[in-house]
Structures are given as C-alpha cells and as structure tokens.
Image (cartoon, rainbow, N blue to C red):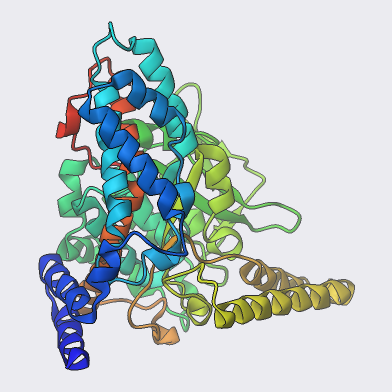
Length: 490
C-alpha cells in the first residue's frame, strides 16, 4: 500500500509543471513513506544533534529575554558553515523535500539572532562593535558559489538552473563558468535584475543566437570552416554590454569568474575576475573560454588601459576552453572569495558516468568507487610520465595527451550537484545547432533538476545570505531593517 502511494506521488513529481506542484507532491511523498517522522526526530548519526539542540535552546532563551549582549556572545562562539556537521549529504538526501526540523529551526534562529544584533541600539552595542562582528562572522561562515561546467550547446541547461535560483532569490553572488558555462555566467553578470527576465526568455535567446545565422548553427564537428571567432563575437556583442570584469561587478554586484586554459605548453590556466583581472574585457574572456580546440582558434584577451582604450592583454599569450584544465575552479574561488560551499551545475557529458547528485556518502560501495577512481587516475598519470619523452616527438600527440590528463585530473562535483535527469546526449549534437523546442526543453530540464535542490540550498545558504545583506546595508550607511531586505544576490 505504501509502495503504491509513493509510486503514484513520484509520478506526480515527475509530471509536475511548476515548482509548487512538485513541492506539494514531494511533501506528500515524505508523509507516505514515513520520512516526515524522520524529519521531526532530532537524532541522527550524521551530525552532532545534541550540540545543535543545545545551541538552539540557548539562543531562544536569550532572544526571549531581549538579551542582545548575551546573543552576541553566543553568536561569537560560532557562526560557521556546516557547524556540527549540519551540511552532511545524507541529511539532505533522505527526504524528497527538506531535512531535519532541528536543522531548519536552528538556521532560522541564528538568522533571527543576527537581525537582533544588526538592529540593536547603538547605546547597547556600538556600531563599530557590530560591524566588526558581522565582518568576522561572514569570514568564518564562508560564502557560496555557483560553478557552471563546460557545456557546448547544452549551455541552455545552465540557463534553467540560473533562472530558477534567481527567481527564488538563491543565486549566489559568486559565479564561475567554463566554455558554455562562461557564456551563461556572463549573461547574468552583465545585466541588472530588471533585465534578466527578458535575457532568460527562451525565444529571446533563440532570436539573438539565430541572427546572422547565429553561433550554434556553425558549431558542427563536420565543418572545420566554422572556426570563425567573429561569429561568437557577434552573438556576445548583442547579448552582453561591452564591460570589463570590474565594470560588470560594479553594475550587478555579481562576481563573474571565467576559466581559461593556456594554448601553449608550460603555461598555466587562469581564472579571470574583477579581483585578479579587473580591466580585462568580459567578451574576449568568454570567447577564450569557449574556444574549443579544433573548432575555434585560440583567443587573445583584451583590456581597458589607463586612457579607457581597448588594448591586447598579454599579447604573446593565447587562450582556449577553460573546461580542459579547470572546469570547476573551487580551490581558486576559495582562495579569492573565501567560498566554502559549492553549488555545481554539471552538464559535461564525459563526466556523467562518474558523478552523482549526492556526493560525500560513506557507504561501502561509494568508498570502493572513490578508491577505484583515484587508483585509476594515479596509474594513468604514472603511465603518461613514463611515455612523456617519446610523445614529445609529436607536438599534436603531446598536446592531446596534456588535454586528456587535464580532464582526468579534475574534480567535477561540489557540495550540491545539479545534474540533468537524462544523462545521455547524442555526442554528435553536443556542438550542434539547437532549435526552439530543444532549447526550451534544455531550459526546462535545468529548472526541473534544480527543484529538488531548492530547499537544501535555501537552508544551507540562509545564514550567509543574511550576513551579506546586513553588511551591504552597513556599507551603504543604512541600518538593516529586520527581514525586509530581499536582495536577489546571495
């Protein structure tokens, strides 16, 4: 009986056309399967529930007494990302919707406590003391980032993911993209919120891409003459204003990061953004990141000089598809922005057999699988080292070997992974032109793949989003106004 009920509700989830329909069916599924009772219970071996319960009771007691000094002291004891293991993958993968009620209550209580401190009377807690606390809390808690993989013409899946996160106010302010992911990242990072609805409209995207015969129509493995940089340049000029990374950030408040790989041997990959390369133009950076070897020629970057004129940037260097060396630049984002929570939109077909939407599970099977992958990777690297000298006789073979090793040695997952429900895509169409129906289908696929992650993202990023909002108000010289701040960028 239970099985038939859950099977029917799963079918309802699969057939849902809106998030609200999916959410209602998911909650009903948890009730029918008994997982709803698991959510009500505090106990779990995957996190220190006793510590979280104690922290929750303490904060509630202090807030009830309006003891702001006590609340500040309690918060100073720890506002950390994944405190006491609350972010463990198993805690957010068991239920169809949500997680332990204790975790949700604790996150909500911390946010309420942060708002109490932010709005405290200056005579009770001086502004400088509050500002110092929030800066330290933001640093300790960390930040979230959305990383978008290389995609080819599957980039429209990323559009669906970004569109959904943006509509729910959950789009991180730190974004990275490689190849197709860089194109989508540039769209959202060079346009203000009021323009994004039009940008995300499937018919508008198709119209802009198909003008002058468009970009994607020319991406075909059987047409070597497609390697015309002006075609991608024309599309980017229509879709993106001509901004540097710094100008894009100042315009939207979003930190765009674009991965590029060196076309020459002995050069390292780069992550371009408003901090490391503020004067580099976004368009050329995206063109370089999308320059798939064999289909597009390497690209030279451009930058705005001190006179406001465009000039070559590192003119002796050319760059290609960033997904070849740093598809998901998590280490660099951690170093530059203090990111410690990664949401990944992954649509690179060659990695699908090796990733799941829930990473970090410590089962026997997952441990064996991880060990096997690591061992295989080490053997491949060892073998490549042994034949490096013989291969160097042929520059083309040596280059292909380096590309293959770059792909093999990367990690392709994050803390939260958004993957297509259909894992097989015709490889002959990976770079092919997509008609309106296919583009709409890919965008919807991205949206639907994001729905099951919405509540997890909301819970895991709520504290960091509130910290960012409070500090933004402080920096503007305005006192935070409780929970009335509703900025989209997290």
